[in-house]
Image 1 (cartoon, rainbow, N blue to C red):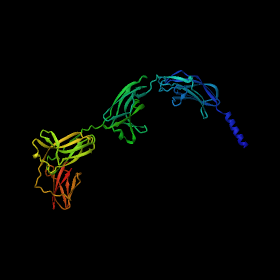
Image 2: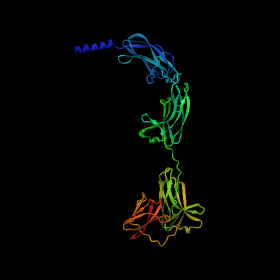
Image 3: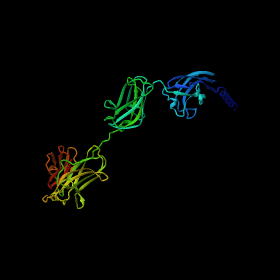
Image 4: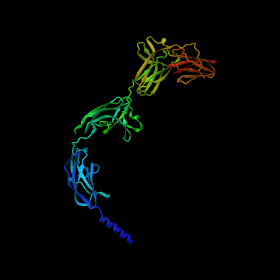
Length: 479
C-alpha cells in the first residue's frame, strides 16, 4: 500500500510541475481589412512549453462579442514557437476574397480568436477572444474573382418545347468562357454529363467574355427544351437534371458554377376528342337483324360512348332515339378510358327488333340515322357523328340455320389466318364483306376445320357462310 501511495504522489507532483500554462495578448489588429487582403496581426504570448500560435476569424454571435464557432472563416498559425514570456510575434493573415462584407451582416461583427496549442500535441489553451479590441470591419474586395450566380434561383419544372429564360450575373478575373445549360447529376450530386440530344448540348454559350471589374455583369440565356430530351422520370439510376451556369477557361476547363434543380416533363398532348364511323359500314339492315360495326375514337379523359338509331327530319333535325316496346335501340359503353392521341376501337352490335318500323313506313319527312356520341360523365354530349340508315322490312322467305357447334378463332382476327371449326365436316366456306360482296381469299379445308387466310382482308366486319352436311350457317368475323 505504501508503494502505491508514493507512486500516486509522484504522478500528482509531475502533473503540477509540468502543466501547460500560458496566454495570448493582442498587440495590434487593423480596424478595417479589405476582403482578399493580407494583414499583419501582432500578438504576445507566454507559455511554459513550445507551442503553435493560432489566429482565427469568425463572426460573432448575434448582439454579442463572443465568437460563433459555426461561422469559421479562416485560420493562420505560427508553429513551433519556443517557451517564452511576453514574446511578440506577427501572424500574416489572408482574409478570403469571398468573405461577405461587414455591411451585409445583421446584428453580427467579425472577430479574431487566439489560442495556443502544444507543439508536442494536446489540448488547446490560453484562449483570448470575446472583447471589442478583437473585432474588425471587413470591406468589399477590390480584387476581381471568378464568381457566377443566378439572379433569381428557383426550382424549375419545364416541359419539352418550352423555353427557359435564365438571368444570371458574373465577375471574371480574366477573359473567360461562360455557359448556361442543363446537366445530369447523380442522386448524390456528382456530375454525370451534359444533357444532350444527339450531338447537340442543351445549352447556350458565351465565349471569350471580357475581364470585369468587381461590379457583376448581367446576362440572360434563352434555352429551348428540345424534343428528344429524355424526361426526368426516365433518367437512369436516380439521376436528376440541374440548370447550371458555369465559368470556364479558354479551353473550357471548369472554374466554378452554380446549380439549381430542374425537372423536365413530356409535353402535354392536346387531344381533339372525336369519333369516326367506318367507311365500310352497311347503310341498310333488315328488321330483326343485328348491325355490327367498329367505331374509332379519341378521348382526352374518361367518357361514355353511345350508339343509337334515331329519327331525324329530312332537314337533319334530331327528334328522338328509336324505342321499341319502351326500349331504346341503342348500346351504351360507360366509363371508357382516355386514349390520348392514340386511336382506340369499340365494336358495336345493335339488335334491330323485328317489330321496328321500316324506313318506308316512317311518316313523311322522317328518316333514320345512326348516331355515335361521346358523352361526358355529367351527361353532356361532347361530340356526335351521324350516318343515314335504312331499315328494311322482314323477309319471310329466309330460313334461319342454327350455328350450334360452329366456331371461329381467333375472334377478332389477329395474325394472318383464322380457323373455322364445326362438329361435322365442312363442305364449303364463303367470306363476304358488309356490302354482301364475296371476298376472294385462300381457304384450306381439313374435315371439320377450314383455315381462312386473312392477310388480304382490310379491317372491318365480315360474314362467313359455312356449308355443312347439316345445312348452312352464317357467322361474323371481325378484323
